[in-house]
Image 1 (spheres, rainbow, N blue to C red):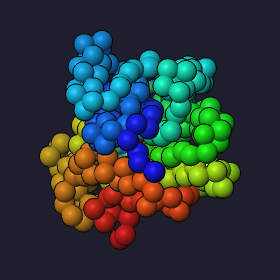
Image 2 (cartoon, protein in one colour; image 1 turned 45 degrees about the horizontal axis):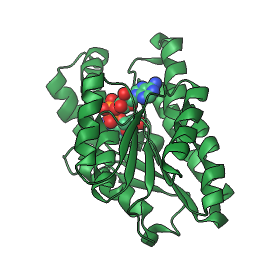
Image 3 (spheres, protein in one colour; image 1 turned 180 degrees about the vertical axis):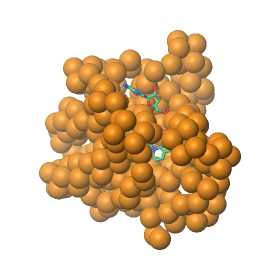
Length: 260
Ligand code: NAD
């Protein structure tokens, strides 16, 4: 079945990977609901650019720390578009600090946004997908869902958790043509990583350039940052019929990082 005309909700899609995936799915003909924080002018520009692909696009303001707003994101999309066919759980934040100095409020925010929000979106969307007899849930995890790095306790914990949620979701809806998979990117140069470069330089007492070459790309055997377009392509493949028997899996797009 064609993915053209499907309706996709992408959390945290006002920048970075989420925005790249939104563009990729729109180019393939899907209608798009974007979400995340940005000023009104930026949101209008993103929507205008998306609709140039001849699809419908809208914005929902849900804060991924607020379960009721998350529920409204899913239910209002169903009301406006008639279905929610594809859910991309992408919103995420990062904080780099040793455990002893890690602020409790940052731990709570990372677990809420990077992990619990995906439970809330999935809980709201599953009944709709079951009723429609088709669905694709894609969780944007990370290489940090498979391996750890120091000073990222909350992020690594949340990303390992999202792989567990991915597998459980996959099993619970396997017979209804609903798949749930995770994508585990290596480093992608987005605003999230740009901030991390600064924080890691401080935490390790090295220069920002050294963070890029000696810390980030050291782990990535291709010595290249991953591009958002590559992640959009992976998401599109997981939405296709060719991927209907891929469920509960994670696809690593990490330049060989986790192969070592
Ligand atoms: P980004 O900072 O560019 O984008 C994050 C998005 O999440 C933004 O749209 C932001 O507004 C939104 N967001 C943040 N808090 C939110 C909240 N409370 N409610 C709703 N939206 C919120 O970051 P990115 O690098 O594009 O990261 C996207 C996802 O990819 C994250 O889950 C991240 O962990 C994951 N990831 C990123 C990398 C990387 O190297 N950039 C690598 C692996 C995984």
